[in-house]
Length: 257
Length: 209
Image (tube, rainbow over the protein chains, first blue to last red):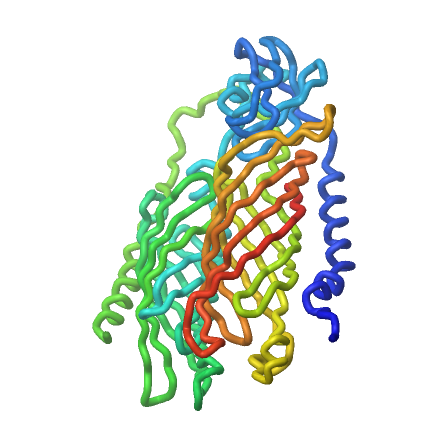
């Protein structure tokens, strides 16, 4: 009997490209520049943990007046090196109470609401219901003006009998962009494609133009994240005499930059 | 139907017209203050909250046996506890055993199974793993779950996944992960629409940026 070559081939086929990618990734991380910020400790001591989390054990400390180098940051934890060459992770609350070399209080500011108001690019995912089927959407937006956003969206509706994909561009208006709960309205235009499952007999694929209008609210969560809840009414223009309409609601999360 | 659409359109137009200007015009002050501005320098610290990785392992597709799978993943660590991760993966599925019985399922013997999903992870047990007496590596056991889509035999279906994994960090910028997941999706490929359980075991390397 013939040996099964199926699976292991995939990895073999892409192995070369994968390795190149790995090497590329490694070279990026090695090339980081080696000048580090230096701060001096104002608290009685800084607690240095083995890892970036409150569950990791404290192995060493840096005393008041000691100067430490900041090697990097992950979430709310800073990796520091003490004058004695010991390395460990310190939480942001403790680092905020240190001084820079010039004696100025350090500002390890987090992403703040002001950054949210100044954001330009936003991308995210949403999950919801398209009539009675689930819908998954990925979208990317660009802020044209304080109140207006241009957005591209790609949705997939894997239904029981057919799968539908939507691709559309929309203009989104946000009348109150600075509030935490910000309502928005959108108008979009794009393409609609419906492909019946191959197991169905006499299945015809449908391609049509799509227009939609939406109403929703976004809520500024924390750091770079915004939650959004949306209701949309889609209309497909199948031909001059026939239109179809679909209701969609979705809940999603977006990150902004 | 038409009226809801009309109402929505009207609301959009209203929204556009009523849009409030965000910031008030700043007026020039009567007294110009003469203040020596202190040069505040925001410290430049390399933040690496993003983890990008390549994964390989075994995906066992219900009714079709186990095959290798390859994945590309990008994760963003929100806090020390939570991370979100996007995955794109591919495996091949063979209907050889059905063909042996004379009932081919696919048009060709092998077909691709492509999947992508977005998941949320929660780091449960932070800890350390010791290699000999000189080397300790930080580790964490995490739970992960999410939603996505699977393309199997040219049909798309929504998928759900949940699993558990362990992440070991030999260096601060490198993560080695071993993960077990159940990838669930509905399929009617054998004549009846049912929820399929597909277990996956992968090993991966991630690099932090």
